Amino acid sequence: MTTYTVRFEIEVHAETPKQAAMIARDIMLDPDESLHVDVFPMEYVEEADDWFPTHKRGWYAWFEGSVHPKDCFEWAMHENP
Image (cartoon, rainbow, N blue to C red):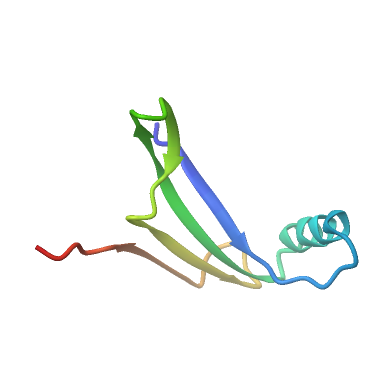
């Protein structure tokens, strides 16, 4: 099974980092909220002897008041020869 890192982009206004984290948590629990999500597969880095998310490819999903994404696509960076 593949492991992924999932990042949610949520803009919140708060007075402390703790309050910002709690607001973001509440937003993610509300299925009517719009969310932008980046999904990155993990890759093993031998030099660090650990797994890290790769930013060479991934997926983007956009939830707009639904439990299923309104838009979802895979992307990959293309290296110049």
